[in-house]
Amino acid sequence: MMRYVLSLLTALMLWSLPANAQTGPLRIEITEGVIEPLPFAAPDFVSDSATGTEFGRRIAEVIAADLTGTGLFREIQPEAFISRVTSFSSPVQYADWKAINAQALVTGSVTVDAGGQLVVRFRLYDVFAGQELGQGLQLVGTQDGWRRIAHKVADQIYSRITGEAPYFDSRVVYVAETGPKDQRMKRLAIMDYDGANVSYLTDSASIVLAPRFSPDGSQVLYTSYESGFPRIYVLQVGTAQRRVLEQQDGTMSFAPRFAPDGRTVVYSLSRGGNTDLYRMDIGTGASTRLTSAPSIETAPSFSPDGNRVVFESDRSGSPQLYIMPAGGGEAQRISFGQGRYGTPVWSPRGDLIAFTKQSKGRFHIGVMRTDGSEERLLTASFLDEGPTWSPNGRVIMFTRETQGAQGSASLYSVDISGRNLRRVPTETGGSDPSWSPLQD
Image 1 (cartoon, rainbow, N blue to C red):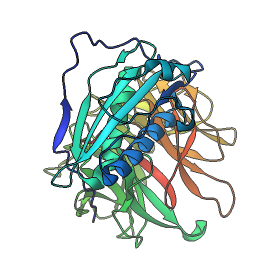
Image 2: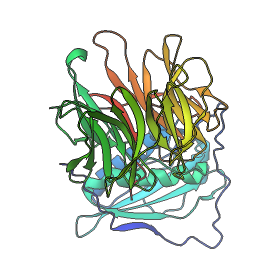
Image 3: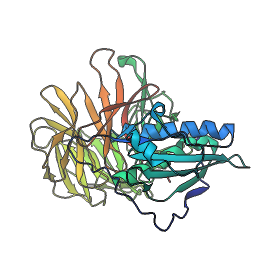
Image 4: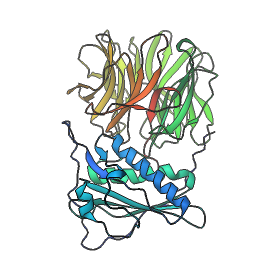
């Protein structure tokens, strides 16, 4: 069902720099303070053909959108350009770019080879240092995959300037919602991180909830009411083939999430009015019970090393966050602020846990250290919930729902400092996002 056509035939091919070319001093230091966006110029990539020229324009637009979308960069519009880039090999007129205060300059070229493939090259320049930043890069891919090429170029620029891992060449699986609130239809959808290239993985015949990517992005776990009771399914992203992962008579299973090894799943199982956490080996189907409290345990999430699990429990009288060993055992409470905590998700970096908090009639997305310290609320709304991390641990995507009988759910993102709150464009309403790892 899903067709996402891209073949990077030549991945990240580097060509040599002159011997005196060094990585320049251009760098954004990301802190929790106010950051003045770095001004950059990204002229259309040049080409010797009409087809290549059109792709060069599109690629430059996506690169600029990726960078400005972080809140760390500010694009200088083409009307302000003094120099015009007409050849990829022409020397850079640094004085002209300095005059318009461009601190970074991106140039590139697009060639359509004999087989119809796009050959894309780019260079990044530190304008004030008057030198190239890093090495030139060449990528080759299908014409249908031009957006992925653009994202990969933007990832390289982002990493070279910030020193952080990138996240643009990634995807998001979510629940696409249509119809009135009391009759809303839901189906699984998958898209690029910026809302482009949407395709649907299930129909709207039954309610689906909480999709979760596998560590390699090839599979998705989700909960479906297809049988009348919540059951966990695992779906192959490339083919949309699926199967029931867990099914026991008289039980309800939900809130699944992969372990970092991709072979194990942790989930909630409700039986006889009690809800506990279980761990399953996907290959054998063997399950192990991890908790046995009379309370409700749900929303588990593994630490990046796979050694611990953070989860939500009302064992203290209200929903709070706890951490326990991945194999079960004594759990330690880590949330102690006023309010109700839920849907914890461990950061890919391992240093933070994102969560949903309900307090004083408002919902928040927040983060805290893994020991519960340094809690910070990043958002506040009628209903914010269900955080998911970008692959580099810098940005959180979540669901925001508006108030009222016709209230709709949408996807939003915010960085971990609480800046740069943005709505993520989707074809329909959207909820329950799960961010993929970087694509290969």
